[in-house]
Amino acid sequence: MAEREDRPRVLIVTRNFPPLCGGMERLNWHLADELARHCELRLVAPAGAASHVPDGVTVSEVPLDPLPRFLLHAAHRARLEARRWRPHWVIAGSGLTAPQAWCAARACGARTAAYVHGLDLTVSHSVYRALWHPVLRRMHRVVANSSATASLACGLGIDPQRVSVVHPGADSPEFDVQARERFRTAHGFGADSSVLLSVGRLTERKGLREFVAEVLPRIVQRRPEVVLAIVGDAPMHALHARTQSVRSILQAAQAAGVGAHVRVLGKLDEESLNDAYFAADLHVFPVRDLAHDVEGFGMVAVEAAAHALATVAYACGGVVDAVADGISGSLVPPGDAQAFADAVLRLLQRPLPAQRIRRFADDFTWPRFSARLMRAAGIGRSSAP
Image 1 (tube, rainbow, N blue to C red):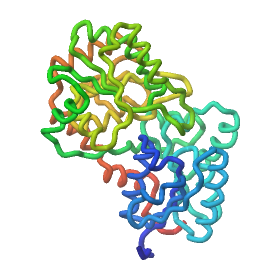
Image 2: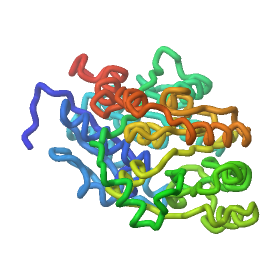
Image 3: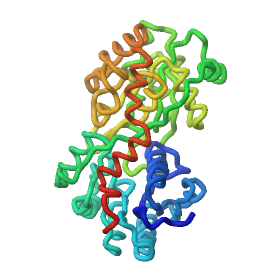
Image 4: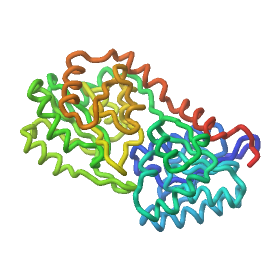
């Protein structure tokens, strides 16, 4: 695609990009896809990214592992790309790649921005804190995925005037009347089952082991037809996340007497995941409030809302931005297992109106995300570095 001189040039440096296909990877793909509609865009990203980038986007690939090798190669490639192409803005897809983006911007006089997610601000490693935090404080703009993440950024000494909140987006799928039956038949759920859905990587922060031990038994006691469907697997390339194995979750369920009410479905493709959202009766998000392991936002709660599926969650971290209490779900005090169970039972008995849930999700479309991000970062105001 021929470059247009009247459009701003943006270079993104990221370690989170398909084919990893987690929440941050999907976010960075949509970031590239949306910015490519308004800017000339180039990407420094892990090997394999070139076959997944949106049309018209040039990518420079670097090895993903090990992490130090990625960081060194990304810094070198980003600096070369910046000196050759001279972008107007260099954006770090997360705090992890902020130093690479900042060095690249210094090589060509570009402005810098970092999109931060929460966990990339709370890593306790001394080297990370000594090298990464000062760079983040030097960025022209820091865009946070939630108000909680913005507070973390300001707590690091970043000027609040340079911090903005731009929530991630979500797709808006068309309602599929056959999805419920298709999914339940494919995975052996009975027509009379009340399906609770959990979507996400299996980490300590997500709290599934605690949920099946402390919350699910209280629900099953009142609603014996309830089944928990777990979609997701353990993270392989997370910056700082302790895992919960499938085995440990199932063992906890067995010990609590609810083993027959838990089904682990593993990782699903996009079509099957859409069916899962449409087929479930409620989405559960029992995120734990852990020091140095924060939930920056909670994209799955917004994705559930886009499918008219309500969420019950603990009110911690950025989850309070992703779930509107009484509108798209219910927020309960962190760690209060009885309150969580009561909220689930209440919403199973009296579901929230589907149109109200969808209206909440309508504010999180990817085009709106793109427009807000460009406004927050100042992209397009001037093509001058």
